[in-house]
Image (cartoon, rainbow, N blue to C red; front, side, top):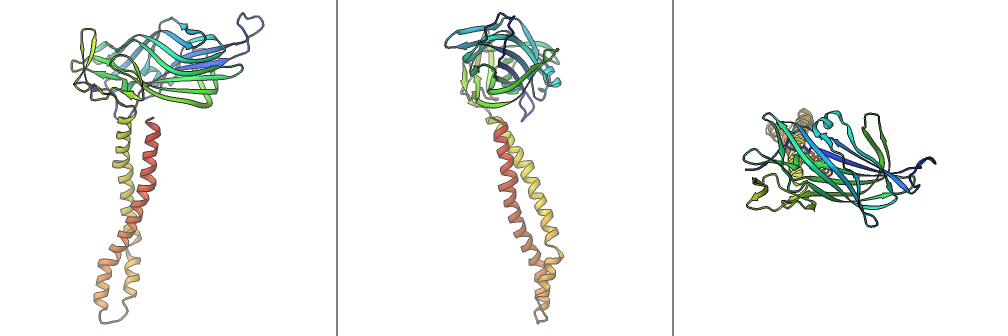
Length: 336
C-alpha cells in the first residue's frame, strides 16, 4: 500500500526561484538595453523527511516561454540540488544567471534528469510520471524593475513509496510571482530575495499522466505501484485539493492542543475566581433567618458551582471565538 513520506503536519519544500531582473547594461556590453536579467535558484525551507538523509534533484534544462518568442532555453547544464542540505543551510542555490529580452513570459519548464533518494538502505531513484514539468507562471521583464517567480516543490506531499519500497514523486507545487523585489547573488552562488509585492499564487500538482493540474495533488493514501516503466494507482485515482491534508492535521492540532489548553486554563481560573469570595457574598445574604443554616449550606453547594459554570461558559466561548478561531485561520494561511 502506498504512503506519503514526511513528518505529519510539516511540508518539505523545494523552491525554484526565478528572478526576472531588468538591468542597465554597460556601454561596453553587447546586450540590448531592452534585455533583462533572469536568475534561477533552488532552495529548501522545510523540516527533514523521516528516514531520508538526502533527496538529490538533478535539473538538466530550464526554459521560459512567451507568446512572442516561444520557448527560450535558459540553461542545459546539469545542476544537482540536495534538498535536505539546502534546508539545513537555509540557502538558495543558483541554477542560471542569464539576460532575457524585455517582455511578458507565461510559462516555466523544468526538465528533471533524476531524483535520487538516500535512506538507511542506500540510494535509489524516485520515478516520476513525467520528467518534464510545465508550469503556468506569469513574469514581466521591464526596465529597471526586478520580478520573481518562486516555485515551491512540497517534497513531503510529493514523495510517495510503493508497497515494495520504491520511491515515486508526484511533484506538488506552489507558484508565487512577485514584482519590485530585491535580489542578490553572493560569491558562493547563493541567492537572496526580499521585498516585493505578491501578484500571483497558484497551487498545482502532477497527476498520474504527468500533467500539472491546478490546486490538485495525488492523495497521501493512494495505493501506488510500478509495473515496468509505468506508474499505476490502484482503485480510485482521484486527486484531492492541495493543502487539504495539511489543513485537517493543523485544525486537529488546534482542537487537541490550543483549544483544550485554553479550556483547561478556564477551569483553573474559574476555581480561583469563584472560591471564597462568591460563597462569602452568598452567606452574607442569608441573614439570621431560621433558614440560615440551610441557606449557608446551599451557598457552599450552589453559589461557587453556578459562578464557575457561568465563568467557564464565557471563557469557553472566548476560546472558541478567539484562540481556536485564530489558530484555524492561521492553518488556512499556512496550508495554502
